[in-house]
Image 1 (cartoon, rainbow, N blue to C red):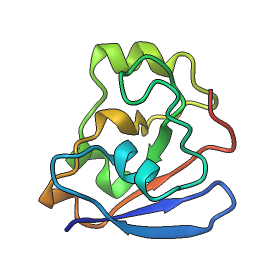
Image 2: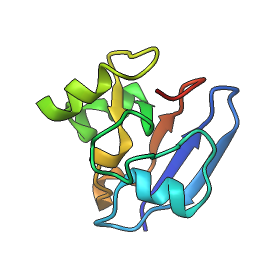
Image 3: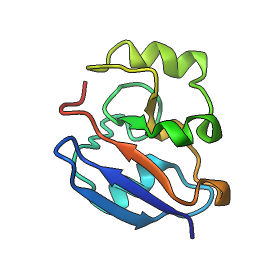
Length: 106
């Protein structure tokens, strides 16, 4: 199982096993990761699962699609590596992925 590390805005890291085929958001919700609200349940209809992808992983995760980019307009403190984690599928290649949650969602 690929390991995903969630770092909160205060710097506390939690490494969790992700299930291939699920999303990073689903992994966070199943494991009660603080800072991931996921109000729309993964429908890419809000910005409450906003994360910053670690720079070393940005190319492997890939860029946001246009619909996701539109939703990121509603997120706070958007950065170059911002993604909605409901749109990141867990794959074996993402073993070791590191994402950081912003200080606040939405």
